[in-house]
Image (tube, one colour):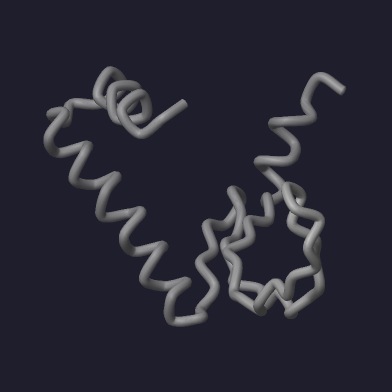
Length: 93
């Protein structure tokens, strides 16, 4: 599902206009992004948490040339599913 499909799905289940839903979705994603950029955790109880983890620098290989390269350290956003989401995904197992 992409953002357009998400917006359309919410519009069908609510009394809001497509424009209103698009604005709420955009603001939600922007808020999550800003929170993670500050290095803070963003948690939706029951759904999951977004956190930032630091990836260390490491050696790698360019797959096209075989040349050894250094991959720089960086921050990466990570999502961890909450209990309700995990239960819903594994309901039929």
